[in-house]
Length: 139
Image 1 (cartoon, rainbow, N blue to C red):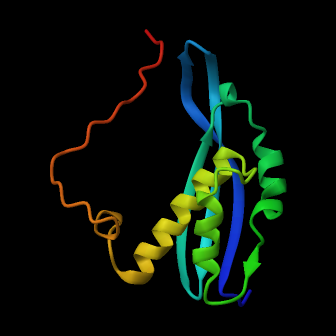
Image 2: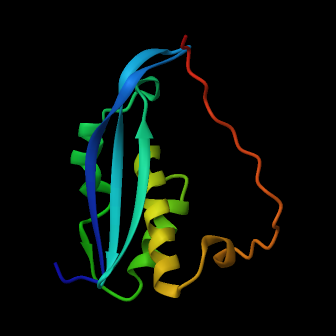
């Protein structure tokens, strides 16, 4: 497809090697959406994990993707227009789609400009960022 900005979305069910249990229950998989944003021959990728307790239907989100983001957009302003749409809190975009598209566009922009996300946002702090991770119930 030849367009200024193209999107595609795929739904994957990621199967776990071992059951994963937390306070919301135990499961053997997590549904995930992957979004690809393409400009010419450059691609940016974004992801949104959909654990069941969030209440989203991954298959339905993937099917509805084009309602929120057309598969192809023409014009030199396409990336900027999508970023503006993402920043509007009154847009009824489901959060997982908003997240995956945002990540894909930032990845694409970084690749197009040859810059890291840190440099795009002017982050010069070299202190390691605090983060968290989930420990599941297990033996």
